[in-house]
Length: 361
Image (cartoon, rainbow, N blue to C red; front, top):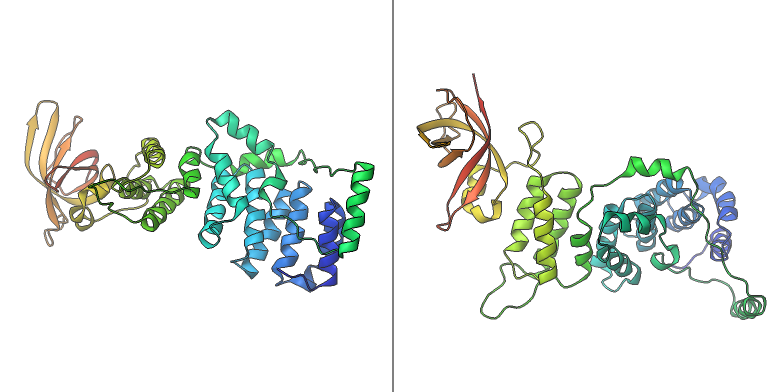
């Protein structure tokens, strides 16, 4: 992007030469002059990042994205700021957005590849503490005349001058704990930079590469938001396709990390019609339905009954499904609110395994 303002040209030169603090002191008083200029926020936000002012950088970079949500440089800088704040999931999300628009973006690919290679939490913590800024930030486009560049190059060679990376300030450590993210999705998120599906002879893929990528992005977002029910559904969706071995392994690993919800904490809910239309898509997902019981049977250590979904008020019957209760319970002749897990069968139908029984009095 061409820089037209003399103030911004001067600031970018200072930033390129490692004078981030001077850039901040010069630009911060000029906020009213550049309220809607994303270039201004990109320069100031990057200067704050390189000075260790991560919270200030977050403020300026997000303000710049409000002015121009499609600004690639702003998103790349903000992604690195998220890494410094120990929020790799948010960094991954921004890199994926950039790659959707610019599939050849080097910085986004490098970032995803670096996270993909991390094998444990200790290694991840070390990486986040020592993020190499220059590797994942966009290169500062020079706006010096050619002769000054040549002269500067000769001086650098002659004097052996090299840039010093600004240290991260000590107070940012206390801020890291306030921005902790849910670990476990890094391996799958990093796969977004690679091919996700493969051709298997005689086995048509259920989803296209683009559809798998969209569902995977949705699964990662749901996981970050602790909406494990929605994350499981999207992971089920992509696992029905011909994934590459590494993507399949990462998807299954993330699915194994998902946790069941309670009646109070369940976020995404699905109707009887949703599940009946495609039981495999909802395998392992939880449903929260009201209805009444019929044909209650005590068989060994389990209780089984037919559940008339939606018939708790005796008006509308949405469907009938077999329920198994794998724990001791007192069955009452009352309408029931049931939290249960979906168990599909080979005939394209499904049953439920109860997690919680709540009789409605």
